[in-house]
Length: 288
Image 1 (cartoon, one colour):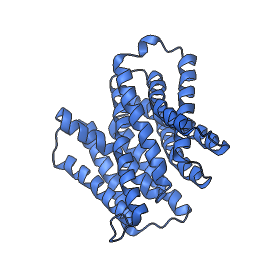
Image 2 (spheres, one colour):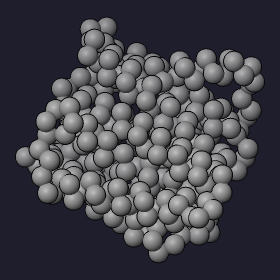
Image 3 (cartoon, one colour):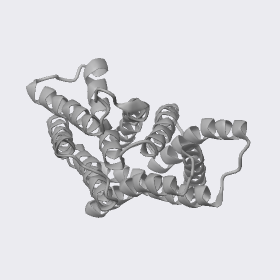
Image 4 (cartoon, one colour):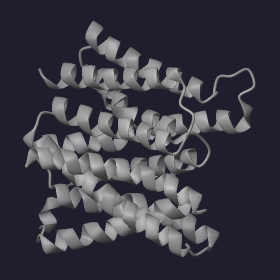
């Protein structure tokens, strides 16, 4: 069953990213796609909670706090990532976005005194090098990068940083055996609230394509997050994270290739460096 969870997690995570690209081609704005996605995921989470008779006591203060952190950070990260895909290279954007495993690692070193040895430093250095090479391949550091490429770089770095919060949330939920379904419902709802406020301020109804892609993204996201959490309960994080983060990065590059987006050799090197860095950090930290 654990292998099935891993496969479904990879498929769900990759599908969410790909839908961002497909929806952009249909003219769907990143805000419309993101808020519809979180609204649909919240409704889906509610029905799963009701169907499985999740008790009110499952919503502990700890679970709600983790859900708020993950939901607000995740919703903002998804919105910024969706905007980045509309501005720059899909495969490169996806590669940087999925390298956010670095964030909880650095967080644990800074705030919880995790050991920082030469192996950990090597993993961190590889991911940082990956971000540089991938960004450089998208002309973010050119002598005249152009406003679009430079803005893309800052936005994808923001998405990268913020998406570390859901990673931390998933790990806490699995480590402390908190209720997965309660967490999913609460986190998606926390993420939906500010997005809905921005939507109301714009007073613009989402089109049919926004509803279509947003609902599909919600289903894929829910499957990806739920299966990641369940996989973490059955397998070591040293196995789960490298697979669920590295496989979507490679699949994203394949999607870019199929869509004839230019991929420089330095971009491929950066992607491989990032995957190596993720694997090294996961094995080093979670096999103790």
